Amino acid sequence: MARYTGPVCRLCRRSGTKLMLKGERCATFKCPLEKKAAPSRRRFGPRRKLSDRGMQLREKQKARYTYGILERQFRRFFARAERSPGITGDNLLQLLESRLDNVVYRLGFADSRSQARQIVRHGHITVNRHKVNIPSYLIKPGDIIAWKGKSQESELYRKILQDIEGKVIPGWLSLEGGNLSGRVLTLPTPSEIEAKFDVKVIVEYYSR
Image 1 (tube, rainbow, N blue to C red):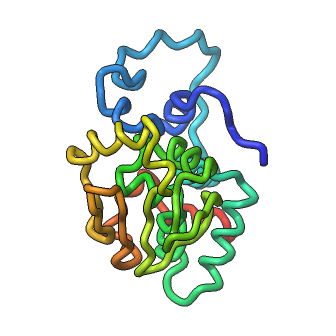
Image 2 (image 1 turned 135 degrees about the horizontal axis):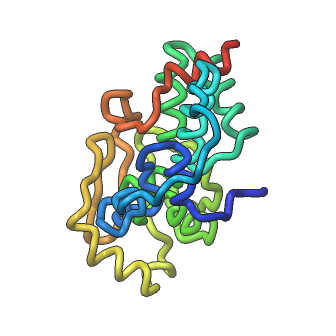
Image 3 (image 1 turned 180 degrees about the vertical axis):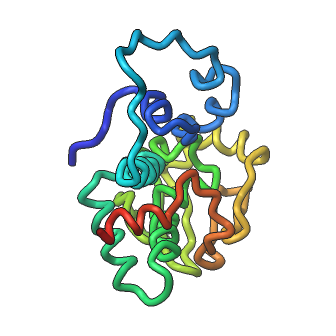
């Protein structure tokens, strides 16, 4: 499947906010958004005001960039959220957070979602002791996410094991730091998800 391979900092500039696409580096002075903005190019005429539709599109793109999802897959997630009982926006947030690559990132097994997606694709992660290499796999309460036995011999595993203590794990997950094994206690609620986008605006975008 095709995927964006350009500089991710450009996506943050385009969105006008930090999307934490490079993990901890985004919180340091090395982040380009923290540096002094370069002088803007010469413009002829006033800057065009963003329309309501444009604002809705921007919020939808923020969500896509944050979770690294292409448009067709994002539409499928929205359609599933719309069919599910409850509030569509809350359902969409819950589905996005329930992706295996996101859970691997939330557990602190990776510094960013893109790294988590790569770890899953390379077959390093198991769900309930079965190898799963599909980043979009949806986890359920009670699932146990762990590193495959042979992968625990890798240099990456040892590095993550050293750095895991300084990471904050959300309340809907539990972690055993000794063997890098996590359990899904419950599905996250909207209040537990610090979204960088307005999900209500995304619902308006697709409801037109």
